[in-house]
Length: 323
Image (tube, rainbow, N blue to C red):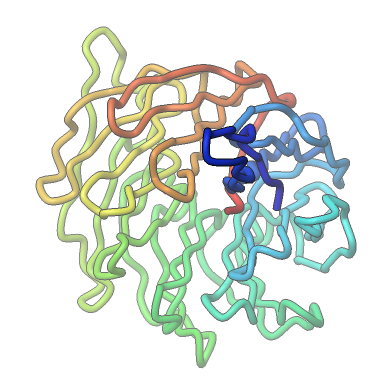
């Protein structure tokens, strides 16, 4: 982990050494450049550009933050990046066209959406052994392991469903109909509900994992923006769990949603086609990958204001933060 050291403070009673302040590391996958851009969260300077296989998209950090797994869709594999050396140290066979993935809380298993073939591949993370290939709907994309590690939610774009997979038996136990073209599944902080964004439907469905029922479905309205341009994609919850940020893609905005009431409080204007997002470790900053402007917007969470834009690679897709 990189360290930033404050200047030495010289006082009348003596000299005091500098105190270290931890800086986080940002990773952005660039779908068109076949790279992952690495930035320092304090300076926002590019630390390194890591070459990957063709078409990197979804990423996941291991629970110990030592490895970053990257879906390399056109090469049908995962590239594994050492987060200290910032090098690709190995690859894992992922099944065809991996798009999004998630890792269980123990860091033992990897769940991968294989978009072209309509199934979910489960790998043993360390060995790369394939544990299961689970048929789901057409064009699976979203992937979210429950915080208690009992089940995984996979979304399928063409089937408009959220599929619940038992993590012990690797069987699909429920198929929940949501809106058109679901893209992302994200659990609330306490794990009691899971949100599924639907790109074409323009809504977010909130599902109770116990009853497997949609308890709420809500959409968005932006004055002056046509409804078909409002396409919900990535979802992130604040550290206190009270607020959700929803990236709205071609609306070029991020919605700020009250979790208790499901009402949108405001919209934050960012770059073009915001896709996925990440929060800083302290929850103070939101990092938004903007696919069509090839940059990342930094949003101050407290004020809900976009502070600055930082260039990354071409067609940035995903963004993650390592503390």
